[in-house]
Image (cartoon, rainbow, N blue to C red; front, side, top):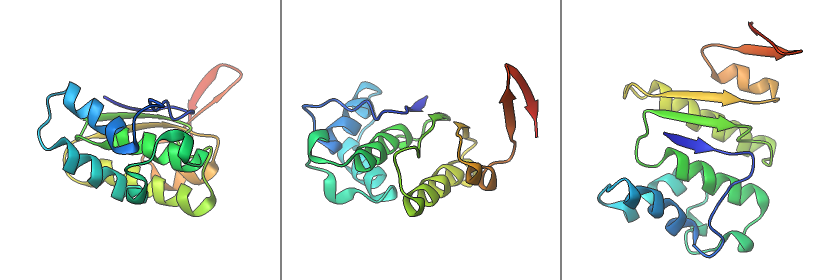
Length: 137
């Protein structure tokens, strides 16, 4: 399962690529370097592959965290406020990337929590929680 957190959660001493490869190697996925670079490209930060989190903006680090979650073809991706640190253009791009995970024909799912109403444009089902009550919209 891939997970996107509100804070990127990257290992500070590792580069962007190494942060992604760490997860792939733990799952014994071959070609981890190529898969990591592909995921970085998909979220628009391939040029940051050799930078550590302290050398990135908050939004760049968040996109690396998203790349880590989508790398390796997880069947389920949980995304908790994945775009909270991103500008409008990058938010739309990330929503499209997450939508593609669901529509690429590989039988995968994304569970997304967001306060951004634009997220509703990219999902199949919307649930709203208010005062502890969960309702389908």
